[in-house]
Image (cartoon, rainbow, N blue to C red; front, top):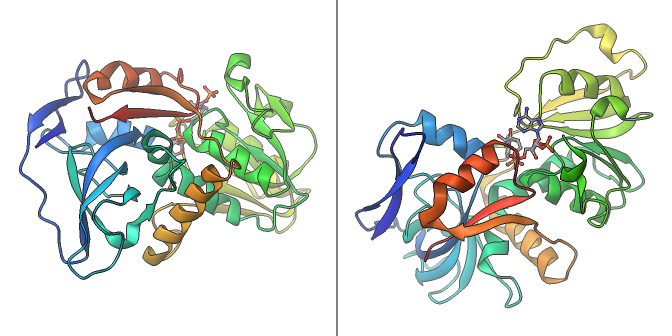
Length: 307
Ligand SMILES: NC(=O)c1ccc[n+]([C@@H]2O[C@H](COP(=O)([O-])OP(=O)(O)OC[C@H]3O[C@@H](n4cnc5c(N)ncnc54)[C@H](OP(=O)(O)O)[C@@H]3O)[C@@H](O)[C@H]2O)c1
């Protein structure tokens, strides 16, 4: 089968190569991958994991062979799945507890946006639960996680302030449920019960000064790669507020992956969640799309079709 492997060549960071077929374990299904998405974190791991590695966490496709232990979707089921790696290939082995069946009206490209970004949006918001009536501020709101988090927060009854880098990046965020869209976190007015922060650096130090008493800043990324200084005085005006670190992978038990993925696909199916796909291209056109994502030129998610 074919798969994309890392090269450490910036002009062509991955290339299509012939790879051995996956050998599923007893609890793993064999899935034919139809689409996958690219995460900002994967741009880093493509560089950091050396030559000859097959990346890929977010896949959507069709089960070719059910897990041998009899669990999970049967052969023929259309699914979305979360893998640790190896997903950028024609076929991948995935734990049956890490996939959800797709309703007929959810396509592979939409589903492929969900695993890392959707689980992150859903689970970071849970740190502020209930968000009904709360003011929620989301940095990186035009990104993969951000565009999903804006919608899930608004759908849950929050009043969402979306922070984007440039005015054009905010196009469409109000339609997704944002109450206001600002181009600089420094322009945010008042305090917030929950902040989802992924830019880091000055954005994070500002976010901490925007939190309300007993509120939470969820720190789930550092896209700027800038450090943040922190002083006790920053919490003045917000006693007992919290800075919560977050990893989508370790945030909840393994067996929660399937139900959370099922929840996200159900929200797409009933029209409550609309993944924004800023680029949908063949997996043979990886390099230019990866460059656009790195340069903050993709709104929402970048999806690749395994054609
Ligand atoms: N902890 C976890 O479990 C977890 C899970 C998923 C993602 N993450 C991290 O969360 C962040 C967001 O992920 P994503 O997949 O949504 O990424 P993405 O699609 O690239 O979105 C990131 C957004 O951040 C904004 N941004 C602000 N300052 C930035 C900077 N200095 N450099 C780059 N972008 C900047 C960009 O929007 P503007 O250009 O409009 O500012 C962009 O839309 C990444 O850092 C990622 O590694 C962590």
